[in-house]
Length: 159
Image (tube, rainbow, N blue to C red; front, side, top):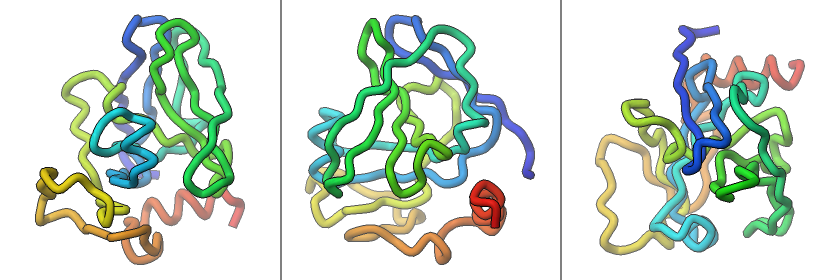
């Protein structure tokens, strides 16, 4: 396992606080229209981390089952008071992986996108960093993820 970096975050009202106990496996900047609608913004920025490395240090989350573009839904962990979405679980990786909303991390977290996805529907005024891979749809994890992240995922899956 790589160097542990603790990063704290939480909701708007302060009722829920958490710590990321490791570096993210990978960070998606998703420009799909579904993420645009759900976030109320031009994209969603999600840092993927093993759920057992996401520690709630204050409060509890409400798990809300919501539809998704895939038709398989997702479970969003929200603050039960201010309703801020803190992280999600998607069916493909299940509850073992949390897709942490990067915007809920405290300032100075230093997490930026590793890939821009679903850019076929990105807002035309969004300018992308030329140093970050861009995919019109999704991508092949084996081609983009760092070897260490792939090893962590294999370990999580018991492979």
